[in-house]
Image 1 (cartoon, one colour):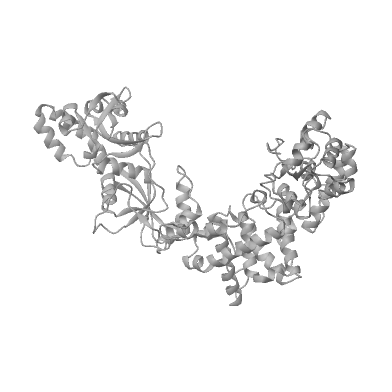
Image 2 (image 1 turned 90 degrees about the vertical axis):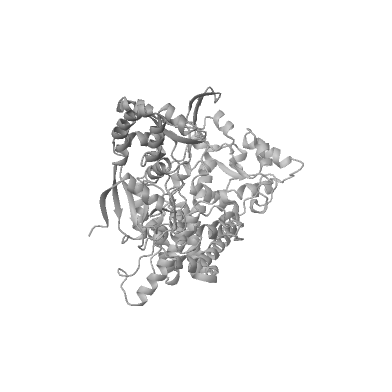
Length: 613
């Protein structure tokens, strides 16, 4: 049985239903945005009896319940008809036509320079009668005062400000197209001699609007909410894509729950909002509402899976754990209400884990998306996540995701697999490792191609070095103990880029992460373009530093740098030695060996170096 019907309705019938409130919009539809040129083009198409495309409507009253609103500009009166259909595709066309043909007020639109303007639309009767090719010039828009001006508004070239002026200029108002009785009586009284000419216009042009049929695709109310949302996105190719959050917000609003307030907060309603609560922790400042909904989906589907298995269902029969778009769209309001506080707490615990692993600055967080399964798992574990054996497994999974660079791109399937696998691995030691731990493989040659901080592995190395006690060249203190903003800590070259160029070392090598480390602006200024042997000596003897050679060697080794190779300006040996040390650091974090050689070439970052480095 088909989930839709197709038919044709007259333009007048559709607009009547819009004005009466029988046809309205689901509140996830964005505002009306068509400009003056699009509106006039639409009117010309109907006047020439050209197709303007089909309209997709959804029968109201099914499980796909959304908050609704009238088409923009329509004010429904008390006792208006009950909504029967919702517009899924065709909002811009129907709103434009309703405002132009059914409302006796200026249309708020935009001109060719995207400036907001008001327009009344008219048809120059004589031009319209001179042939279809002239209809584009015949249909015009005048300003809110019903005049057309030129010379920067100083000269009025057309005045239609009164009905008498409309008769005199022989311009027909588009707001009268579907019912012109009153206007015709006025024209007859004004000048009977031109009435026959007008009747020809009515027959040739106006009747095209009155007889115009619009193809309608009518989705039946039996369609599920997620199906309706997905259909909407498929047909909404001309508009700005809607997020899952906007679609779910409209759905929950039908049940009286304001998801936007719950997430963003509201000063008017004295609601703090979860985003603000999470943003008190800098590492959680970038969490998106869609991330949060994915976490709720994991909770909901995981709980259902456990219940299914407990009831005797097989693993194939049980609910699949997931956070895919369609699963998020199908979340009932009760799932959100029951899981939101738990997940909020889970993200806050995830922030504790991140800090324990060395993260301080959100710009060095490898993947925001990896926090979704992390927070979900930590909630399920409660305080047990701090137990050494469990913590070690979570940390290993986390760093495998980072250095395996597995959380970029489409990650919905990985999120779900990791939650289930990680929990099973924690609860049952003999269980297979999570898919991310198994799949993660870091190739040693990847260190040669890591050049910018956009890479997850690049950020991961930066954090690990600081976590393990890297000290600043100038301040001597551990990087994690310094104020990153006050000391302007950033990633800089160890062998300066200018020195490398003068020594014939290619940019692709000198800009690799092997030749970079985090230091303060004070240290970086003293380094400048000098050879390492020079700047090390200057740093050691600086009155504000006063390092012994052994102290300076200890600082360099905290960055996995062999001091003797820096003092001898031996870039080649330095590079190979540090690459080996960074490899060991990664292996320790991942709990598995780095791949020495592979047929697959590792991804390469852009050659261009970050301006701040």
